[in-house]
Length: 146
Image (cartoon, rainbow, N blue to C red):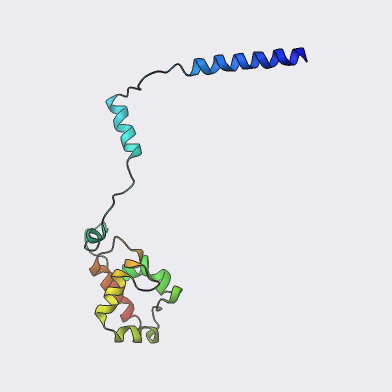
């Protein structure tokens, strides 16, 4: 029992000495300009925040600098729901599902595509799509559903 107490006391002393030696750093850490720049780049946010009004007329994120076609937007952003009819979305190629919607007018369809409607989120979650690109995707789906 005496040996166990002595072992515990020695372990405690060694632990305290080790902690004391490790916590020797005092004061402020100084970084070089290069280290400061590298740290800032690592900690920078991945993207930028845009307000809704700024996004609605944002240019397309197309590498060529031009607008994407309605078919391109459909294939990259709309097809998931409109290809399968997910969450009540009218299916591409099913004219009977588009008739009642089209009776409300093309401008209403455009507005729903841009602002969202019922189960469809605004812009169908294609936040880098311009309003004109979304309108082109609506036109593409209507043309393919005649």
